[in-house]
Image 1 (cartoon, rainbow, N blue to C red):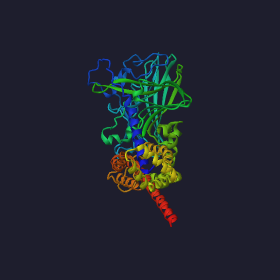
Image 2: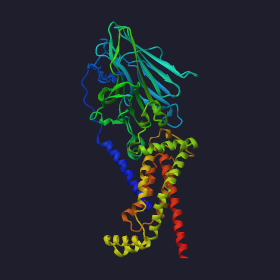
Image 3: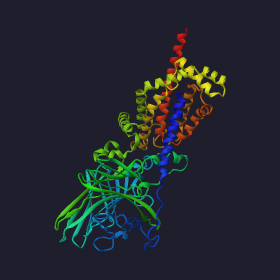
Image 4: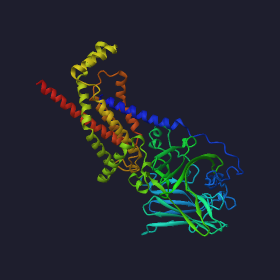
Length: 575
């Protein structure tokens, strides 16, 4: 197999792979929004706070099977009453907690700006707006007593908290109480340099009867809006990353569920020492129950009402604790952790087992994880992700040097046979059967195996795709600068230098490769491939194009050296 054919094989496999992923996305469309049940709410009168309540449709049932659609205190649920925002600022997070429900409704990741170096506008992961709704909710439910669910009204001591200089943590307490004597204190603990928020729900039963109920935590959102229009949309790497719910159990390991599969294949399982998450490109949120606790994990989709009165589909993943029993005069504390942040593969497993699997490389995980580790080590050495990519290509090229040498030697020998192959083509014309038989005789006589170059390429293809996913999913490379005009490796080259260089490398590689015996249509494709790839790569992240260009350039150099050696050897033998 000659080098241009290798490019063609990679191109076809790559495009086929992207088409397959797109087919996976399009095959099962998100179900159309169902017609909501009529309510007394006047269209347009609902507030965003009221919209998230959705008449209790997102409140779980207590373990006895009763579904508390209202506050168990007997009063109307606080769903229609907007809460107060409590703003918490640390060195890495800016969070807003709504006193209605005590939910984390906004989370800004201060170290991850939307645009390079524009830290005044950080990435917002959790969002209470209707268009980008994504909240981390928690509460208590009871079949017989008072319990504050994630729609209940809490009170806050202050409306703003910040991590003070020299302090390692800040606590944010919220309080709820009922006339029956049951009081709940929900406390959030934020620590310096951490995306983990510790939460405690302290139940103080001052009533005369035992309190029985369940604690729950859930992540609820609408699907994120991803630009898929035109060529720029097709090359938008965000569209190829998994978006949906995920969970982990020691028995079943990492599992995930796309939004369009929520109704078809809902989760309903008891899991101990696991976690539940909502994933998207680069970032995610996850609830992590206390170690050793066996929770009921479930997923759900339902119709909610937006602020303008329209109906929207919302999706949630939930963990619900076993039954909690608190005797009169006793207290009980339910503990859990909330992760809201980037997919930093090197640190996630220190937070919870299997959490690093949220960096989803799909079927190439076995190869991609070592590649990511190696890339991270090279970055420590160079301090620049662009140079780390170049060094990684050099290492991969060195590992596959012998295989590539076999491939290029086969191509060089084929090039020497090009005049004779062209003569056979002219002799037999359109009689392809006789021409193929004559070529096979020529290959046998000259001891040339035309397929000798295929095996090396087939071995390298899994590495090629694995590295593609590493560059696609690594949040460490997000907005990382390289040199000169490339100040963002995850954005397209602003001056198209790398795509043009890649096209020139492909043209030079084609010139070194024999084309005799090649199908005319295939030969034409070889000629236009450099142009096609240059246009395609103009919209791809610069980090990916850098890898392709360096890899192609090193391959071209290796092919040129081997061809020169073979030519020199033949001249020496002839002399």
